Length: 395
Ligand code: NAI
Image 1: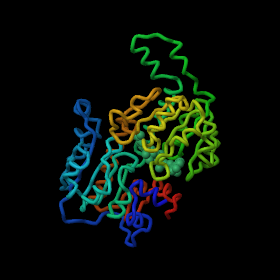
Image 2 (image 1 turned 90 degrees about the horizontal axis):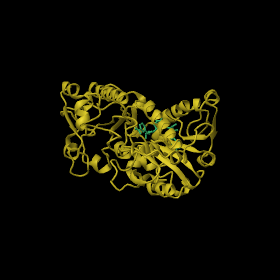
Image 3 (image 1 turned 120 degrees about the horizontal axis):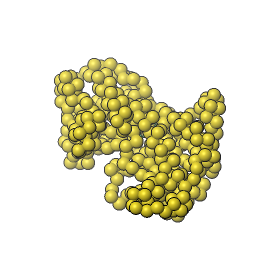
Image 4 (image 1 turned 60 degrees about the vertical axis):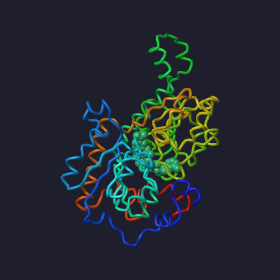
């Protein structure tokens, strides 16, 4: 398990301090006399960002935080420049006390970057999913890692349902036929099915996975779930008429559609490699809005080319942005988009408000909401990340 964790960025002393918590547990950052410096790495807004002030998550609109941060006497740096090692982020790391980053435009807060940021106290994810931060390094340096848990889970669940329907009904290729002047009904219909009566399974039944199941009930499908750390209550299972699977393999063997909704951690990284994909039913559709690294990119492209997977959709890649020649950009039967399912205008309002709440608690020396905390007082405290590690042997 150490080897698997270290390939994920967990190593040596850092590992020790992660799972064997420090004796002095502090729930909030200690006060410091140095000037606070908040460095926020956001995606470029371009024309859309300049025109639409509701795109809060872009550089132009700064999460709506500038006057608030400056009213606290802190310096506020906002940039989209994140590529290691000569980015604006890297330039400001030595005296940054807070870094804000986003899964959609991830500034990978690696161990090297943590080492370059001796004053860093708080790393905030403006969104959900903090795997772009080296959590072991954050534990080691006693950096609090917090995210706006729950802020965009409805947005993603809706997106998953949209992508399932678009794959099963052959929507995108048919749309392309229409927009390119064609009228080939047989071509559109040759890969179009009803969702009704199909078997649909979620990998993970957390906030998003559970919401996906609820949204699929009216389609009269057979629902399934696999989650090694969570069993729904008997009432919930009955209401959803959902089948629980003790192993992923058991679920893959029966499902026509798989939706992946688990966090990225050592147990889920590369979970869908060629061997696991081969255990899916031939002709399966797979939707992954969780994290790109959960699926082996080339293995998926090969499985689609071979016809074993009938279609793959999602909005998460690795790295982000992906290179122009990433196989998912051009593979057939793909419904990929840039990472935007969790950044609808509604979601942006929620994660911007949550980011402000986290900052306010930090400046005022108040404790953070427990469900927002990923790393606190030198240990990983979020169940989304501790449980995946527990199975690999850590306590
Ligand atoms: P959550 O913390 O509410 O639920 C996670 C669930 O995953 C838990 O039930 C846990 O038991 C389960 N799980 C952990 N390891 C597993 C494994 N090996 N196999 C199966 N299940 C496992 O998290 P939430 O809010 O549902 O989000 C899930 C993930 O979705 C996030 O960690 C993030 O990576 C991704 N996400 C993507 C977004 C997007 O814009 N595409 C936006 C929000 C989240």
